[in-house]
Structures are given as structure tokens and as C-alpha cells.
Image (cartoon, rainbow, N blue to C red; front, top):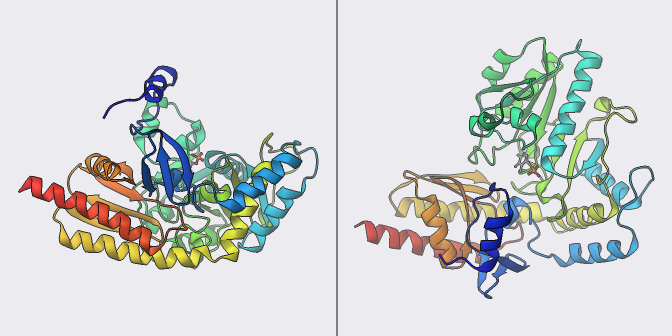
Length: 400
Ligand SMILES: *Cc1c(COP(=O)(O)O)cnc(C)c1O
């Protein structure tokens, strides 16, 4: 595809960390975005599961405008109202009691692991190890790279910080076996997002939570991707009959304004003043966006809509799986879905859909992920499925 001047400049200016698609986006509204030539796309990437209320949702834009004119940043040396209102909303609508606000998912996980280390030092004789899962994704700092159970992210940076043990996902026995006197916590995604949209067995989290309780180690859930309505409930744990001791959030929480949060049960409120902190974390501007997002999500039962539209979408993807050869699996929950192909065709499928006005995410060479805004309707799904079906039809015609 022809590269425009922005893409040429990008090639010159940036460290080469992203394999971008040759598309320069300039505007968004709802589930639609427009490129620099004015072409419209239906966006089923959603800023990587971030734009939960769609692009530029009016309630969030209004909250940002108002807050930007009022107060943007003060430092946490002072009390500010938007962060308190946000924390109140998060506590009211989750099983957790206390909140720490930061600026990204990785940072939320870092803080959660620091809290687990405090717990280990105070109550478990200095236990410090956190058990995480293979194919997990917890972020990009050195520690979260160590926590992430994927060697491709780790090998370029060894030696990594210690204190993480990686075990098979969806295998409670593996966690029981890996638990030692050094273990202070288990940290899992309720559904692995980046690792392939891997949905564990129905009882997995329950079994792990039970084990953690028995051993008095912390049960931590990374809900950075699954939280904030994505899987059809406000938080994914609600569908798994468990309550995490600590939960991390980020992605969808503030509709695209950078934010992270970790929440803890009252009895794990173990930091004292100065033991953790953040310059930007909890600033009024970010918190106004997050509050507006969460308020809208709750008041309009967006998780209920996700549940309904997600089931419809899954059914339609399964129909395509029946209809075409070479589709091995359709999986996920709510609007965190994936289609796995038997061959490495994800890039071609993504590019062909792009051409027809649908944005999709290549998760692996053979996996396409669907993480659209949570406000999409059945009609948007029909449009996306129509394009995908057309692309798959053309591919199968070419093959025969
Ligand atoms: C995206 C993601 C992260 C990292 O979040 P950043 O905001 O990119 O730092 C961590 N955990 C999970 C499950 C994620 O999906």
C-alpha cells in the first residue's frame, strides 16, 4: 500500500517498536473512524479495547472540557474531588474497598505486585514470589516483562527481575504445585487477552481462589483488558464466582485518557504514607474522564448490552466457522472475541477487511481479535460480519 507523508515521517522519527498498518487516522465518532483521505471505517480495534464508549463519547468530551477549564493537575499533596468521586464509584460497584490511581495498566500491575510484597513481608515471613501464567500479558516494564509468561517478550531483556514463577494457564493443580513458602500471591487474567483470548474452564478461577484462601496468599486479578464491561459484566470476576483480593484496571476505564488503577480489599490496605505514589496518578482531568465513563457505563447498563451483542456476534462468527474451511476456533466472551485460523492468514484477512472499511486486530499470525467499542449494536455486527464474510468468500474462491 502507498505510504503517505505521515507514514514516511513516522519511519524516520520513532524507535521501531510498532508494526503499524498503513493507515493514518484523523477523526473518530462512535464506532467509526476516518483516515486522512476522508475514508470511513468501522472500528473493531477500539484503541486496543480502550474506546469502550466509542470515539469521542459526548459525556466524556463534556467532562474533559469542563474539567480542563477548572483544574488539571495538583499533585497528590492535596485533596481533589474528581478522584474521590471516581474511587467512590469503583468501590460501590466492585467487591473491593480501596483504590490507588496511576497512569497505565503496567503501572497498576507494578503497584499491585508491590502491595503483594508488602503483604508477604508483613504476614508471610518475607514471601515475595508471585505465580503468573504462561501466555499471560501484564505489561512492559522490566518487572511486568518478568511477570508476563511469554519468552518472546523476555528474551531480549534478560536478566529480568526475579520473584515471578510461570505456570500453565487454566491448570489449578500447576498453581498448587508451584506454591512454596516463598509465594505471596497468584496473579491471573480472568480471560487471557493478548495471549490469545484464552477462556479458562468454568471452575478454574474458583479453584485457584480457594487455594489462595487456604494458603493465605493473595488472589490477584489483572482485569486491565477484561474489566469495565468488556466481557458482559462490569468486571469479569463477577461471572466466575470469585472475589479478588486485589484487582487491576486500565484500558477502558477513562475512554482513552491514560489511566490505571489497582483496588484492594480493606484488609490488604497495607501501604503506609510514602511507600507508593505517582505524580500524575489520580489527576482531576483523568479522573473526570474515568468518572464520566464509568457513570455512563453503569447508568446505561452497557455490560448488559455487551452480553447481548457479544452473544449475537459470537453466533455470527460461529456461522462463518461452519461456512468456511480453515477456521479452527471462535472463542471469547462479551466483546473480547477471537477467530483462529488453521494457517497464518491473519494479516491478509486484516488487510482485506481494512480495504473494505473494517478495522480488525491481528493478535497472532493465525488469530484475529475483535475488541470493538462496547456501544456497538447488532447492526454494526452485521456490517462487520458482512465484510468478513465477503473477504473469506473471496479467499476461498481464489483458493479453488
Ligand atoms: C494491556 C494490558 C496490560 C498493559 O497495560 P498498558 O496500559 O499497556 O501498560 C496489562 N495487562 C493486561 C491484561 C492488558 O491487556
